[in-house]
Image (cartoon, rainbow, N blue to C red; front, side, top):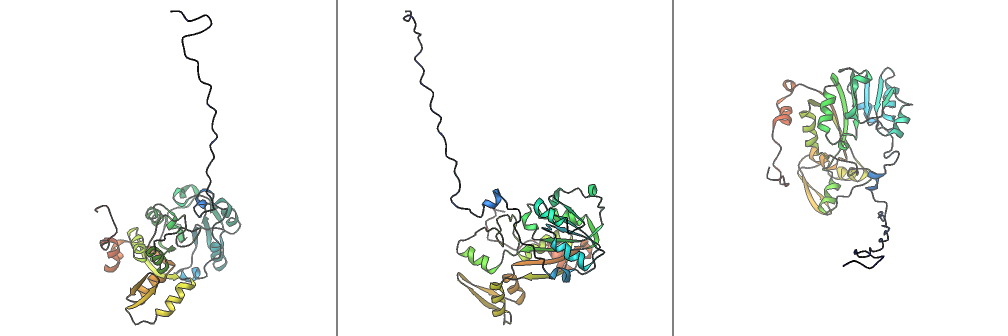
Length: 295
């Protein structure tokens, strides 16, 4: 049957739906993790540790400061060793620009992306490397050290510092169920890797280096614990709010109180290592109760 004149057989269409405006969610407060989305021009302060020069076992001639910030550490080296050429690596363009006024050259790239040959740096030319608060920010610090191992001279000196994840107050917070990331410090929101003193030693030896010297840094709270317990006798108990920790030696106490573990290392061949040093390369890790997926 034909539809009436002027009509069709299809049902009338509904009017288009009015587009609904969605409110974009924004965090209620300026949380620490906001740094990951909007990094500030400069996160860290820039006061060089005066112990850097004391930790160097030999006079540098070509030094590389990785994560050089504004160049204050390298500038201190240049003042103390006027003949030393000092280069910096700093991916933050704001601080890199400041460092260029202090150092001989600054490369504003990630350390693992640098083509050293393109910059005219031949293997063996660099005899000193500073890695202060760098390795914990890198996804694969093992590969970073391997690349440096094959770049530096055979007797090079490398000074590195890494936050101590065994710190007594970090343990205390963990026992309280707290693992709070902060803009800086032991749980800096940009940290990717975490090391105890033993795991740092494995990192060093498994990537072709050996230990030359070591030091730790302490904050005021950790200094107070050291002062109370450093004279022994050992073993003794360290009381914290959530637990009592037994320390078995002065070295064990230092391991618990350290905020930063500072190490001086140099390239080494396996056959040059002592039996104790070879254990860091060959010996299995201690048994762990942490879940490892059945491994």
